[in-house]
Length: 163
Image 1 (cartoon, rainbow, N blue to C red):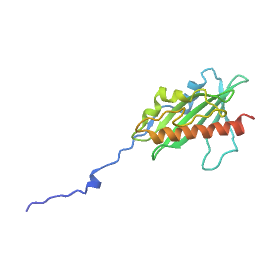
Image 2: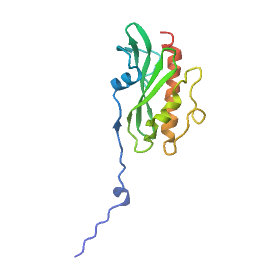
Image 3: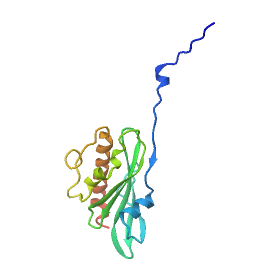
Image 4: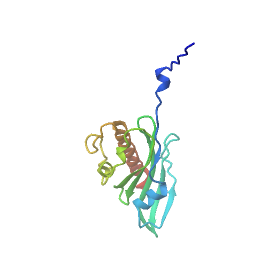
């Protein structure tokens, strides 16, 4: 007797997810503010249970250097954890990708793409497809990271600038 096994096509295709941690929060703090002597967590009440970024006040002695905000956005279907460094005046000093969990679109981690955000502020927030160029194959990651940065800049303007 000859036995033939049939495997349904859907069972033969496996979706592979990639999760890569590029930096820890501590590494991002040191990269953004290399002269900082300490980072103090800031309690921000202007958020919702669905959105509660971690905010750190970067200081060198008594001098306020800026803020480091750790936030998450959805890429295509998985979370992207990133940090946004804001200088003492609220302008973006740097953007780092801490964790990237998507199988495609990791090019958002490239320095050239992230550099587009530097210097932007709540007064002149970055706009997708105007200031922030799209990366083919990473459209949703690019769009959602830009929206996340805009949301953090609004939080700065509403809460942190007054602190």
